[in-house]
Image (cartoon, rainbow, N blue to C red; front, side, top):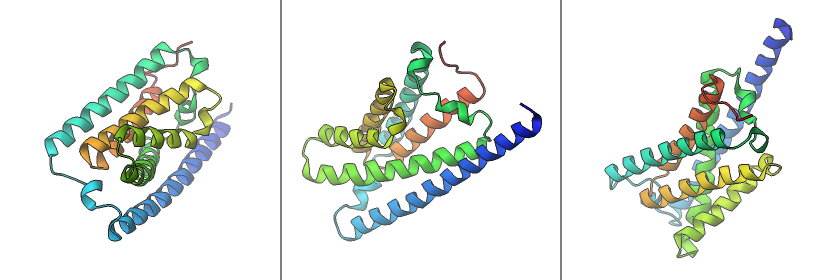
Length: 202
């Protein structure tokens, strides 16, 4: 591939990422608006959504969940042959750090506001068992990731983190916990691939 073609390909990838960031940012704003309305109309309380009553627990659970999920992602990559794993990270190889940061930040914000902030919270208003609400939310989260349906093992790679995001949110009552864990999981794994620190198993 010539230098001009390669440069054109990189510019196209950056443009696609910018489009994705714009979409995620727009949906994030709609999610915030929806949650604000739920709080205004007393469907949810601010304390259910953004509690800081126990900062030590919040910090501990956020950090341990984030590290645990990153290690899980690394282990999965090392142990599972590449033909069972989605190679989506390859398309980010030439993307800038700032573009990737923005993509994963707004992607995490949108998905967590929607699934944990809205869907899971609403389910738990009617379901007494927390894990039932977390599991149903995670199944809906899986449905969003249609690109993984051809590689069923990747569904497990989505389901386990989703369950962890739901659990840490229930335990902390602070949406920042799953947002931070979600962001760092996606960002760190992608950076490890980008700089070839982590490689798919042949």
